[in-house]
Image (tube, rainbow, N blue to C red; front, side):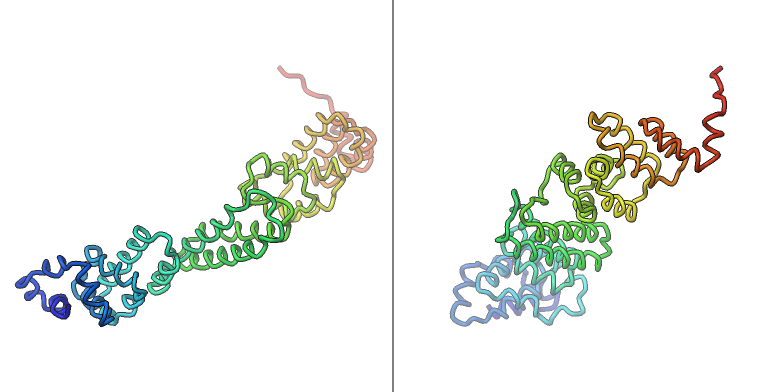
Length: 327
């Protein structure tokens, strides 16, 4: 083995003279036998670092990994000034572990930490968290809370590593998912993870706390205002949950379209008479007085519409103005 090492560390001219092929054709079984008694695994690392044909010499990596000496490759001091060689080694080690030992997450993480491979570290943490999340196919219950909290930690670490690599979108995704998993840990009697589109819509309509509903909506990309119309109707108009509306308006804008769309749902509701007061209170939060009056008139809130005319004289002018006929 020492002769092979000398071949690996010899000058290039000597390598050409004696042929690197001698070393490359070294039998794996022979190496295992020679090292079984001596335990001098550092010789293999010197050989690997000297020749620098890392992918073709994966048998050395296999020996080191099987004997629990893989860290010797990372601790070798002979390549500090060889940036290209370190890059090749980094990628070769990562590819070897992913391809040949995909289950060995610990060693892959060790390699990523050593070479400051923050993106890969982020991927590793995200994959570990995703494996936990995929297990949730029903309300998780108290037994799984510790696993969910661990997943939150993994996602937070993943986001931190992605940010170090400038991966803003991936970091944001991890943080949004971490909030959902954290909420799932707090409400273990209701399933929030791995929901379908219809299940998300049903949750948004039935859950009375806006802040928690927002976490779920953002996690499933249901953040557009159109996704909130039925939730607002169910919570505010049907149930009179005006705290929900206040929280909604503190976070999201309420353009005229929201009031118009909720009004359309009210007009189609066969039980709208029982909900007329809630509808009036909802319209009162609209900053556009003219829109308030028009929608109140459309849904038959005559007393409310008349009161608006008394308070705002310009509405009387608008209501009495002759309508132009189309030409």
